[in-house]
Each structure stands twice: as C-alpha cells, then as structure tokens.
Amino acid sequence: MKANSKPPPPEVLVRQFAERHLLKFTDLLKREELAIRTTSIANILVNAAYAAQDDKNLADPAVGLLLNMLHRDFEHIEASIVAFVTGCGASAEVIARAATESSVNILYIVAGDRVQRLQAYFDHYLMGVDSQVEKWQAQIRHLSPQEAAIHKLGAERRRLATDALRRFLRSVFGNAKAPAWPKTIAQRFEALGDTLAYRTFYARMSSEIHADAEETLRYFLGRALNDQSKLEAMALETVWMTRFLIHYAVSLFLKASIAYAESYSMGDVKAPLKTALREIEKELVEISSHVGAGI
Image 1: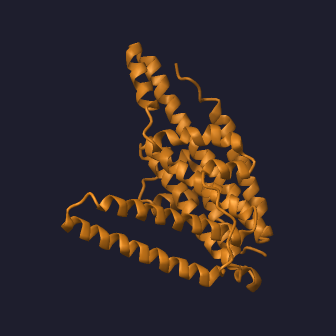
Image 2 (image 1 turned 30 degrees about the vertical axis):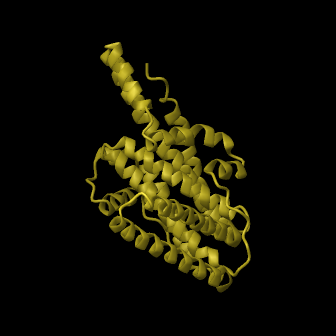
Image 3 (image 1 turned 135 degrees about the vertical axis):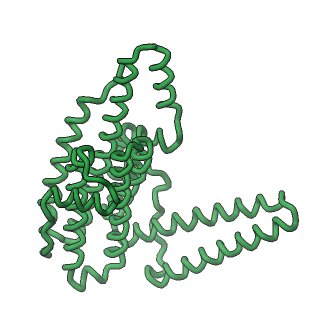
C-alpha cells in the first residue's frame, strides 16, 4: 500500500520539532538533527501508510491500537530529546528507557499473532490492577473506620472499572484465552532473541529510573580525586552516554515502526525507514567511541 506523504526537508523537521515543544532553534538542538529527523520521518510515513490501508487490514482489531502504541512511543522519544537539549540528561535517560520498553512491547506483539498478543498485553495489565487492588484492600484494616470507608469506596470503584474494561475487551476480542504475556521485560527481550541488549543497554538505562547510586558515586570519586580535568572528563562521558542511550531508543523505535509496516504490508515505507535505521546505527558506533571510563 502506497504512502502519499513525503516528509519535509531535515531543517524543516527540526524547526517543526522546536515549535512543537516551544524550544529555541539553537545549535544544540540542530546537533540532534539525526535523531529528530529519523523519528519524525518514521512517524509521518507510518501515519500516511495507515491512512492508505484497505478495509481488510483496517478490520484487524490490532492495527489501530498498535499505531496508538507507536504514537506513545514517538512521544517518549521526542520527550527524551527535549529533556537532553534542555539540560536534563538524567531525565532524558529515564524517558529513553520508557521508549525502549514501549518499542520492545510492539516488536513482541507483531512478531507473533498480533491480536492474541495484544489481548495478552491488556489481560496482563488488568491482572496487575487486580493484584494492586487486593493489596490496597489488605492495608485498609490498619486504618481508622473513617479512613477505611474512603479507601473501601476507592478500591471498589477501581474494581468495578477494571471489570467494565474486561467486558469491553471480551466484546472486541471474544472470550478466547490468550497466551500469557511475558511477565518481565527480560522475557520479552529473550523472545525477540536480544537478551544481550537487555543485559547491557537496558540495564544501564535502568540506573536513573531506579535512582541507583552510579552517578552519585562517580561524582564522589571525581571530587575525591581532586583533579578538575578528570572530573570534567567524567562529566563529558556522562553526556556522551546519555546521547548513546537516546539514539539506542531511537533505533528500537525505528525497528518497531519497520516491524509494524512489514506486518501490515506497508511496503513503500520500509525502505526509507531502513535507511534511517542504518543512519542511527552508524551514529551509535560514532558515539560509542566517546564512551569510556572517563578517568
């Protein structure tokens, strides 16, 4: 199916990015042109290809929901870049990690029976809500009668909302039991044959989201060495690592976009998306040459 939307030139895409996020068009922003351009192109082309789908593909319950997941993923990627260019490197890593998990979810869903795996994705979420409500209710007994009454009402409303969502999903997917959703992101990486990425890139991304001691320990070491040049080298290495993780998240977003396009026979968008992926992978190699111990 042909996509009729041709992406604007690179500088226009960067300017549009700046306008979307109320940013000044600075040299720092222009330096991230590759990440901005490739993700924007993927978003534009996939949206156009979806709009050109025939009735058969549009009848698939997963096609629009997966596109929504890609849109959320795109938003995370852009937010990560915004955080980075506005001096919030730690937050950029947190958001890049969220984007990475989102991409892995999409890749996992389209790698098998799309509808069944999407149903499993929803079922897993609702079972998680059930578990949280049960734990919530278990804590109510420690409260005063007045406080307990408020929490009982809240927990019951949450339970009723979850039941309503289940009924809605059954009306869409039927009552067939879907295969279990892999409980951990590690299992999803493994199912995609990419366990090494989980143990390396994803593990490093998780440091900031869990507020691990890594960066504080590095700062402590740099100060203890009492060597300004080494402290600056460590700070610069942190910046390069953040850029690396953002570009890694971009690469997975592009892979998820390509997998979605292939899954729905969006032939015309695959070539430019694969070209964009090669550009990002080349940039990852370049960035990696600047990442080291920093001391």
